[in-house]
Length: 197
Image 1 (cartoon, one colour):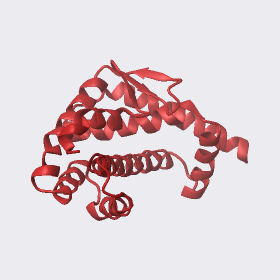
Image 2 (tube, rainbow, N blue to C red; image 1 turned 90 degrees about the vertical axis):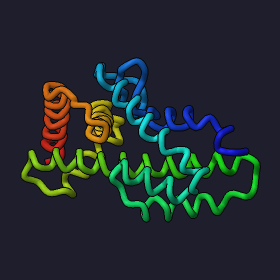
Image 3 (cartoon, rainbow, N blue to C red; image 1 turned 180 degrees about the vertical axis):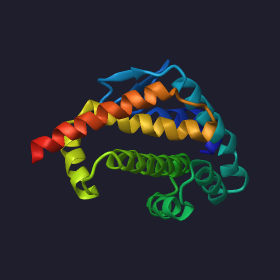
């Protein structure tokens, strides 16, 4: 099975939207229970889709390494970090007919995962700058919120991922929305921290 037969567009769309976005323009939490209307979100996802889809042809034309290099350049993440994990996963595949599709999905999924992980780390750093406690304390507070499946934390993290996507495609998010989401999670972190003391 060639990559052309894999519905590459569907794979890209699914991985970009998974646990992040719901059409037509809703940012969702990880459980899809809470959503926040952000009108430009659909445009951001669409532009990210176009960027990734436009380089997908590199996979068959020049090989997986060129595709992964281009993708990691777009996302601003380390090629080696993605490629090392991709290589382990793809070597576990045999020569099944669908192996090429799975390899493409591994490469894309690992790249998006690493991008989102780094965006969330940056989001947490923004919270940390508002307080005078150290990173370990913040991680404890966020861990408690996360264990409780806190929807506001999830929305904040996903919002930050969307913000990082918006930076890539040059679509500005409204500052009012950024402040609203950020201030809400800062208050929640402060409240949770006081309960820990």
